[in-house]
Length: 114
Image 1 (cartoon, one colour):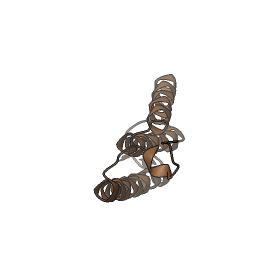
Image 2 (image 1 turned 180 degrees about the vertical axis):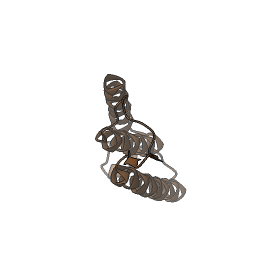
Image 3 (image 1 turned 30 degrees about the vertical axis):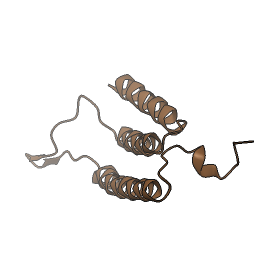
Image 4 (image 1 turned 180 degrees about the horizontal axis):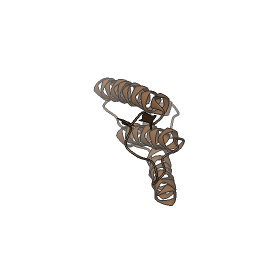
């Protein structure tokens, strides 16, 4: 299970890096959103999830609980990632409305007509 999670995290980081290195602003925002999902998986992988664990229930006086701190951190990271993605999408939309461009090369301010 850990090797599958490691491969999924590596794939998400690869796709996120590919998208961030693009020239299109929407692809950059999508790449940052993919990075947040990869970060959430990294935090989730820190938990001690094994196949011999039982359900988090109290049975016959024995307590088998999963650490809820990682779950709370991932939930908070999901909310923050959604807020950052929404902010970046509004920023890209406003930039497009003002400049009528969605490429990052045009927005640098350099004169490329020379």
